[in-house]
Length: 314
Image (cartoon, rainbow, N blue to C red; front, side, top):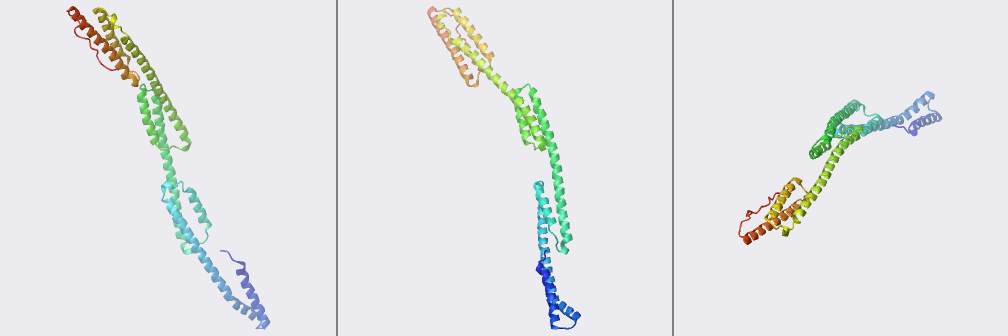
């Protein structure tokens, strides 16, 4: 509490004037005059004393309210574990405010201090617990992510590229679901996992590029077979042996077709239907020619049953 200069000077001035007044009036001797001046001035001193006490009491009550508000806020911080680390700066600010607040009513000093210490210590315990738990959590997460990195790195040697790719997707899901590691290790562990993933993804991409090239070669081979069958000139087959030779050639082409493998997906059915149509045309023409020949010569050719193409897709 600050005193005003007038509060200090005014009583002294009144006391001096009282002395002067009693001297001028010639009331009693010097000792009596001094006592009389003191009696005159005493009520003023008493009034000032009461005024100061009231102000001092009000200031203490105001300080009490402020410190109770600080304790309430400390209690909130100490009971909010999810925000403990974030609230640390506010906690330090509250400590400074507490120290800046001076006197409070004497009857409340011990109780205030005990409550303040209780929640301050509780908050510190919470911070320590959070830090210890976080460090433990970081450690466990690092162990998990290191294991995931090792598993991803092993996939680079997996013979089945498709299986390796699908296993990698599961590892990525686990990596995403695992919590953070210590800040200084985050970049390193992610870079390691990403590098291992890149190797698996590259093999997967190369596999499908090679498969695409193989399917295109298969399509080219099947296209050549179709062209061979489609290019047959039936008018040049003048004997049964000619038809028999071409029949065996068709059967051989069908057998070869089965060994070639798939064409690109969008062309696989189309190229098969083209080959089947060409074979059907050959056998239909063969059957018609044989029937005409049998009718013309009135004898069996030994080829009464048409050779039917086995319609199996590749």
